[in-house]
Image (cartoon, rainbow, N blue to C red):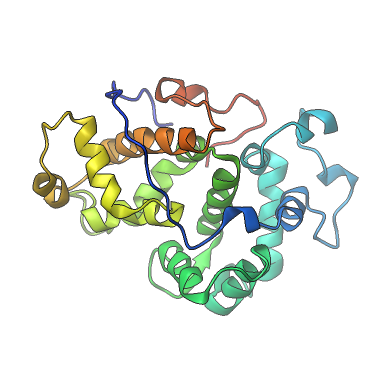
Length: 253
């Protein structure tokens, strides 16, 4: 549990997004099939709605919330296992999955950037936890619910990014890996954060400081709040952070 977020300044600037993936090319039939379990040969009626909800309630939930129901997560895991040669995705399988999910509209270099981001120990493998985060990124972008995604996975992503032998905090390059995956231009991030500090932090200080866990969550919470608003869908506010998951079936990784 992240706990209460500190007070955050309210000035905002428009965030310019540029991504090498077009989320509108996401094949929602495949994505929903992963969550529903309908792509698996052993799927049954019991896999089609999460515990404690009926079909009508489930149909009203966003892709991100569906993914974080108990059944959605279980079905996603079963799909992951069906693709793996053990308990991980190798680079070749990952590329094939990514291409099919985006109807072959994403170039291989971009796909490999995602693979490197998720291959946290540089072993050439993407494990289940990282694959689940990837599905969360896609769902969050599609639904403009990136702040909620941070609520679900912020702590895990921080641990993914930081070098286990260095507890001083994230470097600037490590910090901006997530924003790159979300399609936010790096040059706008420093400007955004400095503006949030009302000019009390200069660019050189920001780029050379180590960013600890609390700052990682704070900075991205405000950044993604604005990101979602720019997409004209999400109405999430930072002060609502702990109330993001309104459906009792939702789970935090």
